[in-house]
Structures are given as structure tokens and as C-alpha cells.
Image 1 (cartoon, one colour):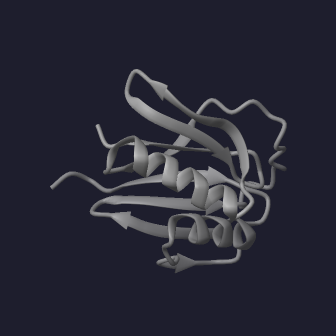
Image 2: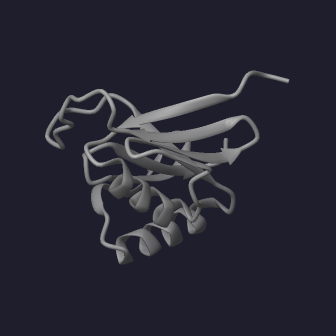
Length: 121
């Protein structure tokens, strides 16, 4: 069995960010503290939001990484997820478009961290 991997997203307000990701990903936290909240996403994969380092996260800062949600179901599933998420009022960074790996779009969390949706490879 491979070692588990956790992707950590730096945020200003961990509880607020956790509510955003819980709503977006339709999953509840598996572990919570005031500044670190962990989501168990799949076997050996997790996502955590952390506001514990004391540095302010500024949405205007250029992001060089993304959290990516992959979907089965082809372009129609990606477009449906875009419609669902925009209905929740998320900030759209990139509208749905076709890329070399398939249909995709990007939104941002309240702190400016990027969340991509793409097809399963």
C-alpha cells in the first residue's frame, strides 16, 4: 500500500474555507481544529485547509498550483458541475473549455486558491 498523501491549502479562516470545500465537494471534515481541517477524500488521499502559519493569504497572489476534482462522464459531466458550482456563487477563473486532456474549468476559493474540474484521465 502506498503512503497516504494530503494536499494542504493555505487559507485565512480555516472554518470558513472548510464550509466552502464541504459544500463544493459534498464531503464532511474527518478531523477539525480551529486552524486545521482535514477531509478524507479517497483511499490514501486527503485535502486539508490550514490557517496555522500566521501569514495572511491574499487572493490577488498568483497561484502556481491547483486542487483538481476529476469526473467520470465526459464533457457533459464537467459542464454540469460548472452549472452546479456557479449556481452556488463561486468565483469563476476560467470558463469551461476543451484542453489536451479534455473539458475543464477553474474556480477559486475565497482566498484565491484554484480549484480545477477535469475528466478522469
